[in-house]
Image 1 (tube, rainbow, N blue to C red):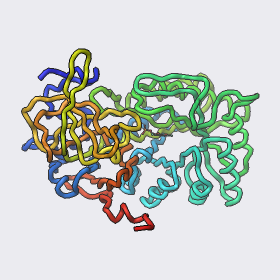
Image 2 (cartoon, helix red, strand yellow; image 1 turned 90 degrees about the vertical axis):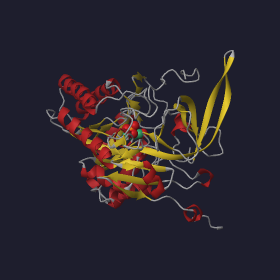
Image 3 (cartoon, rainbow, N blue to C red; image 1 turned 120 degrees about the vertical axis):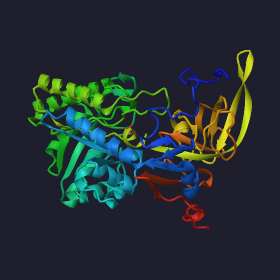
Length: 471
Ligand SMILES: Cc1ncc(COP(=O)(O)O)c(C=O)c1O
């Protein structure tokens, strides 16, 4: 069977549709002697029988080792720079009490972006000093909670919020340790970045002059004068799915130049600089992520060179990877249901496209709908000799855009009841899940040391009705 003209350019016809392509799968995943996908020896059919489908499966060792890899790579790359480095796991990607504990045990700090995420972190026993709080519109209650627990740092997003944090700290009689989130005008994704003067988006303090000073400069002046605010440094997050260090390098240079300007104007050396998250992962064969060490070395080189040029002390560096730690450690297991094949007009001719429905969809993975994100899939409960044909995996929701995998070659003999596994769903899938169409959110299962255990149980019908006051 030849490659289909309906396939996008990046999708190659697989030599073996049963293959688990690198680097899409967690370390502990392989086909077992029966040809089934297994996680540390546990076959997916066992997981499906015990926990049901759809099911989020997390390879705990894999997640932990990715966390360690970031920590080690950045520690090593920045070892000669006086300030040192902290890795904050961006909890928004995937946060449960277990995950908060795992990353803490692996020596990472934890970045949260709401009172809810803070509550998870606290329940996990993460020390307040290791936590940061993000968000462009933190409530007074969230700010109060952060100040009361003595949070390591609040990343302040605007002048309004700066005043609010200052007022709240005064009222509580505490001091708030803050970073200022700046918009250095760099937007990066995959292999490219663009640098613009203005930032037409909701986050952060602009660095562009506005009537004599930039909002970022005004924020520094305000924070330095405020008796209840301790200004730690500056922060920038430039995008997501970034594979090259060049965007981070431009942002680092801009933040360091800003830090030098603060020193010149106020005589204060800012102690910290955060370069955000956004490290890319492989969702499909088209993605080519770099090892953390490569990016870390390139970033350290730029920081080393720039602080020397500017004659400033090297601030303590921090980064906030999310998907790069949890994304590739997880996959989603679905059971297949109905199928149909449609004829799609392609120039003069029509070509077949097969739709395979699964028992989940946009409620367990919103990324294809939100960002037109691409994924891939394999038949997980068996191997097959049958030809691969271009297919679209869709969910069971009442939306025609409810696509799980837009384009993938899957064996012709996929039948109702087969298990499909979609890799790289460990980040921004459970975190973005919903109850659309009153589907119960799937369970999350961790596999480690040849044993599986429930991290989050599947929702029940009672859960779905629990807040309905008419029920
Ligand atoms: C401020 C900030 N830091 C870190 C992250 C994590 O990004 P990623 O999961 O792509 O590494 C995000 C994601 O949106 C973010 O907004």
